[in-house]
Image (cartoon, rainbow, N blue to C red; front, side, top):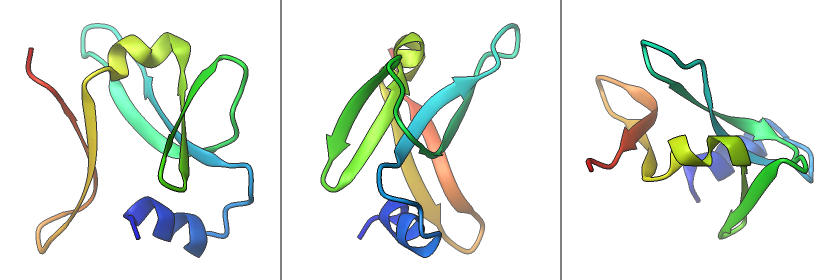
Length: 87
């Protein structure tokens, strides 16, 4: 079971919710990536991976393209890590 599936069950996220991946902010400092549980909107592109649904706002697709999301859990850090593929 993935970390996202574990969180979904542990937090009792209601049926119909999926994982939203997006950006917030922009400008000189670039963008910050975000991840959370949400319901889909008409402005989203929807993807499925196993049992999980993923929602990405169509306007964020350019920024998300090539993004890898991983979960790290070791003695120094724990959490989601976003890495963009080198061009």
